[in-house]
Amino acid sequence: MPPTKPVPTAVTQSNDSFVSEKTEQAHVHDVYEAIATHFSATRYKPWPVVENFLKNMAVGSIGADIGCGNGKYLDINKDVIIIGSDRSPTLCQIAHERGFDILVGDALNLPFRSDSFDFVISIAVIHHFTTEERRLAAIKELHRIALPESKILTYVWALEQSSRRQFSPDHQDVFVPWSMQDQGVTTGKVYQRYYHLFRKGELESLIRQIDNTQIIESGYDKDNWYVIFQKK
Image (cartoon, rainbow, N blue to C red):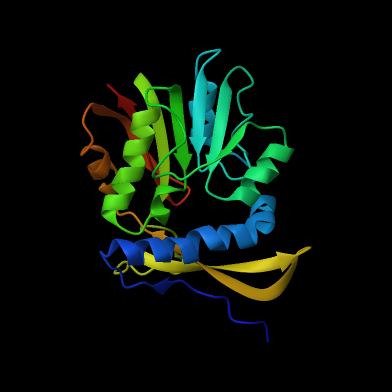
């Protein structure tokens, strides 16, 4: 009989900043370092909304991809320059070996000057922060580094997903298992990644708390909520 597929488990959240940081370190940063090579091998196909956003940027524009992972979006548009940043040194090294400009950086304290970029993307990052305060702070950093009138695109996992992940509508904070594989064979090692699952409208509500912003577009795509907003 095949082994039972691991399922997500609910997490009891704390507003204590020390506990929040420890949870993120153990169940986000440490996990992505451990699974970086396997994770990178599964991340190669761009999502159409992100691809269209990048391809619509003006020739010569300079952008930032915050939480760029292995850099799969950094060469979508050959007519713009995109600088990648990620918290995982190993994922940054993988992207660097692919020829991309990469910085190791914390999404809550980005290594960029304010008002620097013509556009910013952050795909599947904000949901890894354990409190609303930290999620808002991360979005504010995207806003800070963007030039006035520039556009920002961010994606987060949706609570309202297909049943394949077996999410409960009663639990927004969960550990989602990642089963390690070696050359396509499951090793038996399972890592638990923390996610905050966003309800419909929740991401927009966070963004509206930031001064000088305008939401341009929002929607549901591939089990994610996304928002494109503009810095005014």
